Amino acid sequence: MRISSKGIRPGGSAIHFQYQGQQVEALTSDTVASALINADIRSCRETTMGDTRGVFCGMGVCNECAVQVDGVNGKLACKTPVQENMKVDVQPAAPALVSDLTIELPEYEISPDVLVIGGGPAGLYAALTAAAGGLEVILVDERAKLGGQYFKQPAEEFALVEKELDTQYRTGRELIARVLASKVRVLNEVKVWGAFGPRHILASSPTSRWVFRPKRLIIATGAYERGVPMPGWTLPGVMTTGAAQTLLRSNQVSPGSRVLVSGNGPLNLQLAAELARAGVTVVALAELASVSGRSVPKPGLQMATSAPKLVADGLGYIATLAKHRVPFLRGSAVIRCDGVGKLTQVTVAVIDSSGNALEGTEKVFEVDSVCVGFGFLPANEISRSLNCSHYFDSARGALAVDQDESGRTSIPEIWVIGDSACVNGAKVAQSRGVLAGVAVLGDLGLSLSETLKRRNKAATRVLHRHLRFQNALSRVYQAPILEEQLADANTIICRCESLSLSQVQIPLTESLHTAGALKRLTRAGMGKCQGRYCGPILTSMIAKVSNAPIGEFAGFISQVPYQPTDIDIIAEPA
Image 1 (cartoon, rainbow, N blue to C red):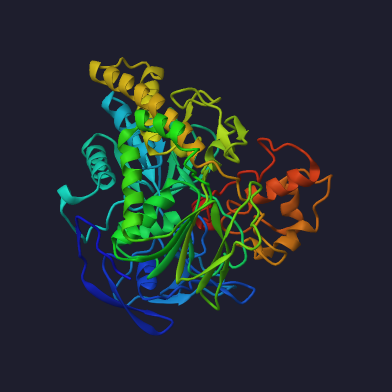
Image 2: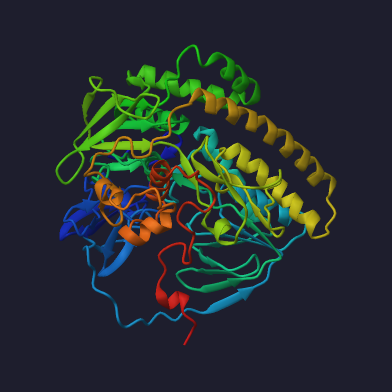
């Protein structure tokens, strides 16, 4: 379903491609994912169990949207632009292996002052600040466009009316333009697949291999959404809130015509409001937190004094839902997804303080899409691989980086900033980006201009203000962390390997203390997402059975390559 957001005029010319031999109409502004979803086609890859999977994370992490494009397997629909007459097919469960590897890419070795990994809010501000102080800065991002998940921009084919765009679009556009006009060298579509030290970073792009040997390293890889297994959560049509927002904000395509949004946190509220404004039928917003009148006033006042604009935005989203008569189900969550081949129905129930559904509170909704967002997990594979010190943050149910205020880690040459260090939102990420850039300048012996000194002071004030805001926000949205509570014995826990709850429970004993041990016994976590979605769930399950606390090394160990990478990229040139 195509939509039109305020300030974004329809753009892109009509083209056609084939899906399973069927002709599909698309626009040049589409990815394969947005074109298929607009045509109400949900299936992308086939599993060994005989079912199909569709777009889930929308950012290249889960690999569920892998399709075959013009005979080539492993193309991610969410990241592949649609082209005239391309042939798209469901990727088979066991695709044929290619034995004649002929890719020979040139390799470049570069030794900049600073390498920034990640082009979201934190990385953009860090790169811009370091370059403004006179350093040679390279910024790499695996996406084709800068902005990350927060500042995602409309496809270039759309005609934009700048003054009508919302603040998030405009702020992102201005920041990206400043970076592109600066002395920062930007390398898009560059995937970091290995890090063997702060001065030995390996990466690849569609046209090149890269070896980076920076004097200082800034990691700003962001976060991805927490997976919450429940019956039917692997059905095509079930996707994360972030995936839906990418479709909406970048491609002007709705995830469906009848959508239910469920999860925990303000991003779900924003998505539900944006969908409703765009004319999509939002059947309900199920928020896990109770958000009762008694719990809001005190933290609400702290939020209002810390970030009044964000509070105003939130109230605007609530007003939009009320205007469009979208039911706001507090203390509730989707607990079951049903359909044959694709999603057609969801069940929502009230959730107790332990994360279990209360019997007798179920409500059933007819939908063609459900968007789930139960919080975020830091994308910390690189920092863990480089042995930066981490600790388990029990309040968030995730590892966080040990760091100082600027983001400097236990390894002096490495900074980790933004949500890849600890999930605290875009405003905190932007502030830490400035502080990291300034800290690197000082560390490399450069003096600060008066302008940079002022920016550093301002960023420090903004950081403290928004940390207070985040603290209050977490109290408003306080809710149990959902892991395996909603799953039954047959529910898939490891999406990649199609392993059910009962299958991963078999080896659990008091003597099994790590997710790595469970991985060797069950294959859980050996798929293309490399345990990003099942790992936290399995780690928690192990801790409950063994009574061992979750520590820095309880989960899956971060291993090279961090993402699926062709062997001829990893291997030495002939």
